[in-house]
Image (cartoon, rainbow, N blue to C red; front, side):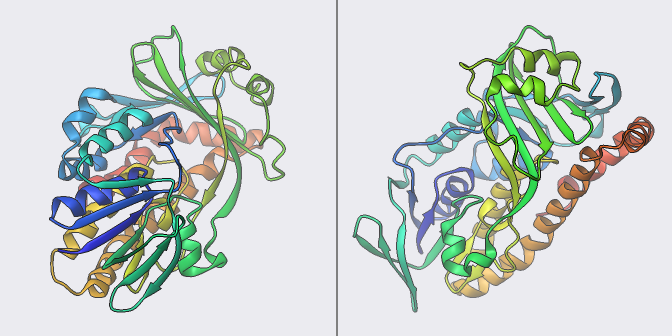
Length: 373
């Protein structure tokens, strides 16, 4: 049995704690926030999320709380349909949509037997035959394994690998929120504009998760008020355009910069990074939660093969890094299509989407679903 400290109580951290705790290890989770943060609005869980969710024992709960995604529709910014990808005909595991808060609650319930400390973080770490940790409250502990699962702006990553490992700003500002709307939209609608993109994802009933991003290298729109978005994104018609015009000061709209984390290593001695701390990526192919859970399950499997923790971590990194890098590369390529601004380029993109859109979209998920992680 190993003593494991997981730093971070988000999707990556709780998934890792569940996976390692389920194998009989003594796991403690610490979370910097003093209360659970359940922002993020909504989650799109593609088919490759199903296998790790099954391993973690949450697949049935997620299916009950979420909404199955039968297909994905792509539209132009004017609301014209470009193509649809029928997921039901692919024979893949289910794609699902769920409120992030509901997903996190499912993980917390599954991790109810695991010790979790809120308002705590690592103040110092010294590695030798084990890892000696001093916490922010002055207490100490000794562990066999340290897992940094503290997100895209990971302090554990900075502590292990320095500021050179900091995430890279991708020149885009994004907004996301949930809303009730009378539109009868039964499948996610992706919209591509001129230097921008948007998503409407049904969560069940009249509830929708809405996301949009725009080219913003000068950070002009970072502090934009919700009511200003209709003017910033005034090229959009259709359902998304109406959702924008309906935004007011009372709406909770989360604004952020899109960044990417690509540290050259994820492991240092008895410590490793998982999830966004290791490979934070653009949301283009909806892999944040799926890759975090895959990390957790793969780590649990490699640690079961022997007692040599550094050797297990090396195997795990070799197993996971190529897949995570592929996801990052694909996500950047897809985002480039949305960043096109010139009208001829946008028209050509939309024409190609009409011709080969389903093949291109499916190609981003097929290897993730059909190949082992």
